[in-house]
Image (cartoon, rainbow, N blue to C red; front, side):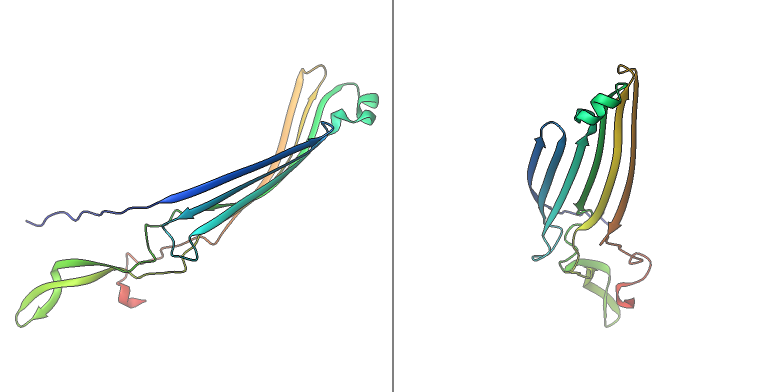
Length: 176
């Protein structure tokens, strides 16, 4: 009987976070967030990825022109956010060459099959972080003595630099 193949892998990740928030006069808001990650899923030179984002807000209900002219509005805020996030969801160490000992699919020596060494992965040292660009804009409002609340947001997500393993499971590696 043939023993089941066991896969052993090890992956590491390091992350650093930072956040900056500031509001001026309880009206104008700015916030920045940055995340710096390193993943062993990528080769040296592609290991680190930065994910920055920035958000701006304006609490219009704290402006005198709104307080004086629109008494039914208790709270009104406009906000916008933009950021890029990274993801390392690829197979572990696809940038390294790996081989497996094959008992049945080795090479022919005389009239019998011999043990062989077969490649498991064609290495790709250029694999890097998958990125998602996000944009979000919105309005928050409370009116009529806090009896009516509304929040409207629009957003856009765009993923790029994604890794596609392709059809490598359907065709042999020597087929390209």
